[in-house]
Length: 212
Image (cartoon, rainbow, N blue to C red; front, top):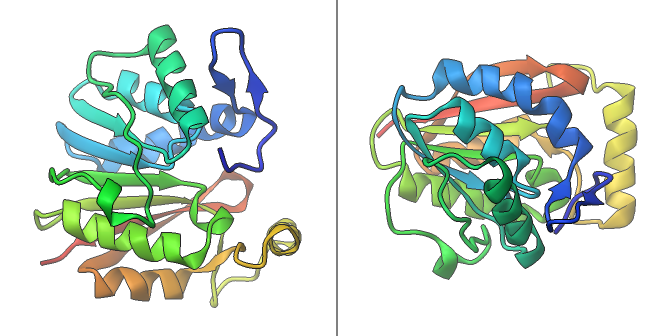
């Protein structure tokens, strides 16, 4: 499982992510305000699964499907589901944003992705946008991205600048993504950036809507 968090394994196979525990409430507040009252959400790069169980429990009329290409992550998601799972939480999918053969055919009302695009190659962001464009078939379908970004019209926080340097030292293909480049890529896939929400610890939620 690709993460920079201090993951702790638990006896039942679940992985505990301090970052996911910290940011769940703030992310949920935004999702609750912008998701439809009922429908289907596909989570990309669900990692430990803590977001999936928290959001599915808090949004009982949303059918929440987590996914991750890592078998370790999917095992953790399943373990969290055994602990805290709700009837609306679906089994995890082995979805890889860079491999279209793993993508589901079913349409969804929203796609959610947290903390993936800066710790993966740009091809993963390109795949994410194509995937969202394919699965969000109804006008108004939501793509919600969470994480740190570089913004041309905003000063980069020193902590984010240091984080970006650290990421690139680990893998030159990683790094904070330019918000406008992400937005341009989304537009090519039929998705328009409609809202920017400032989040704790110099993170953002970027909300895109299907416009065709």
